Structure formats: structure tokens, C-alpha cells
Image (cartoon, rainbow, N blue to C red; front, side, top):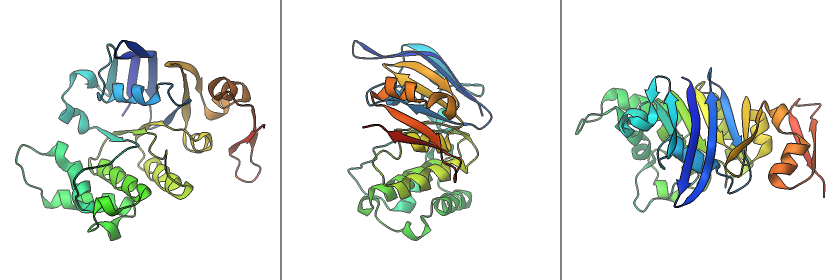
Length: 253
């Protein structure tokens, strides 16, 4: 399912954070947003899934007008995984993931065998079957993030938004989460802070600076020394690893 976002502008208070940004994700692409802290990546994503309401622009997911549709209708097609998932009350891992079935339920409708099967599959995809009876609050940060991903998978979305989901995780959990999402074979728009992860997992990138699109293209086209210096004020060299054939970075001190 394609995501077409056109000319989004978003204010927080009186300050304009997002300035006329347009992006698109087609043909089950994994598309990344990169840029320094405070550049507007998270605000832009929140504007797409309506955690913040933009004051201008349009968002279409297939034929669905996201900004004019009910949250429940949007949630049947769109899954969201953020970077902060703290809770003041506790559920088991299984109960947390089962919440992903809520958008598909009528009011007071009970869970069915189909829902339980979908939850089991989501737990299996995220390697959480052995954790299903554990307390969510007892888990590590990486484990919690896998639970949130499993909950999003249980929604059976046609598209997924990731808002820096690996921001505070070690390399193992970063790879587990991004690989799992990549293997869903659905469209993905992800804000990522790790440039090597962005280069390895993304088909296309949008570089954001001061609330605007600074550059866009394939990782090889965007992740150049000139663009990286403009975004992050650091000098580096890029290279192709001869073993992995992947893009790498060497910071110049």
C-alpha cells in the first residue's frame, strides 16, 4: 500500500516545525528519514499518524484520507512503533500484543480464536513466545520494544511507521527489530538516527534539516560527505565495505 504525503506544515505553539514536507513510499519500500536531533523527524511522523494535527497538507494511505478518517479506521491499515513506551500500569506480554487486535473489534466484541492465532504469530515473528506470560514492566528496553512491535504486527497493518524505534537499544536489538520489520514486506517509513542502519535497511532516504527536506534519493545518493557535514556538522568519508558490499562511514577527528 502506497503512502503519499504532500506539503505538510505543522506548528507547535506558534513555532513552525515542519515546513512544506512531501514524501512518498511506494511498492513496499523501506524509506528512512534522517537528520539531527530537533530537525523535525518525529514531529513530521506524528503529523502523519495524527498524534499532532498539521495545519496544512494531505496524507493518503492508498485511497484512505488519513487526516480525515477516524483513528480506528486508520489503525486497521497503519501500525506505529515509537521510541518511548513506558506505562503506569502492567499487563502481560500476551495481553499487550492482544491489544493490537482492538482496531478490528466492534464495541464490547470479545476476542476470537482467530485473534489468538494472530497474536501467537506476532509473538513468534518477534521471538517472544517464551515471554508471553511475563510482566511487560519487568522487561528490558529492547524486550519492551519487541513487544510494541509485536502489538503493531498483530494489527495486521498494510503500512508501518517507525519513530526512532532503536534509538536507545544495543546493536543486537537494532538488527532484530529492523530485520523483523523488513521481512514483513509492507511499506515502511522510519525515522532513524544510525546512518549505517539507514544505509543497510532503507531503499530510499529523505534527509531533514530545520523542518525541511534537504536531500532525498538512494542511500548512496544521500549519504555523502557533503550532506552528512551539512546535517550533522561533522566531517567523514564514506566507503563500500569490500566484504559486505555495504556503505560505511569513517569520522574524521
